[in-house]
Image: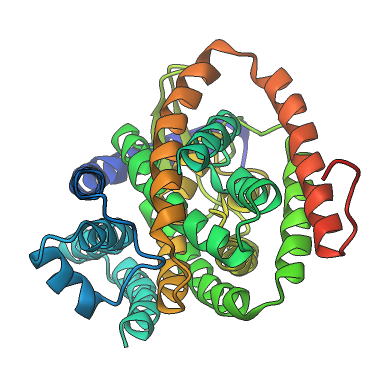
Length: 133
Length: 273
């Protein structure tokens, strides 16, 4: 292939990538927005928990409690429960982002990367289910 | 808690300047200077890395630097490796964690000296549909690329995941050079893709450490707040300082911490340690 033919092939490839980038842009924006809101809510919970701990002079727990104990602690208004929930919320943010990516690939009918993303979620599910057991 | 938060902020300033995240500095400082159990330090670091990724990757996603297909393909092996690394890490002898962490720090110090490639790479076979293009505002150019040597990249991802899970570091210290130098991904796309990946990578270890009671809010809360604030300050400072000089100075700091961690693991105490 001579230089002119190679340049022509590369121009065609780049045009294809630009179409692909335009197709991906809404998904990138959605994932970014989900991550921003997950962080804002998590940070808000963390600040609320710290404020409650300072106001009530409550000590922080030595470990994040099991999920079954965190929810009742939050409902009872314990600072440690709110802080534990904030930490678990932040831990869950990338999982939610991965679910959004999977939904995006399914919507684009991209079967190969839907399966790949499904595999990533399955791996994450193993560790999460093991932790919550 | 204030001291932990201040130190975490300092670690994040250094990490942000080098693009390494806070975890690489956090675990050595918490363990060497505060005497915190390495497993609790690694657990805290894992949460910090997730939080940093959640904040940082949203910026890269907005810029279009993140290659989601490449991220997911590499992530299958990275996340699997991270679970294996975390399960080993929670049960490992702390001395092993010290030594392995020290070796990773020495590697990071050496990698500071390797120049990153930012050339517009030639476009090859794109049968995996991983090719992408993004606008680089610094050069005002469209950067098109097709990742090369994908099987090798996927294989190394598993190793990066094992180290990430075991040590609570993001894995960007391995993945950015792998994507850039081995796979031919432009450095901004490599950094953007890695920033998104490290959060997902650390989810699995975070839950493993959580299940084993190794997430201590007394360590995690100041670390998260300190790293978040320090990361913002570090990003601003980076724009004002010369990157090459920073890399040299922090390469020396990383090497020092690496040697201290290895000596700690081997039970050798340096003068003044």
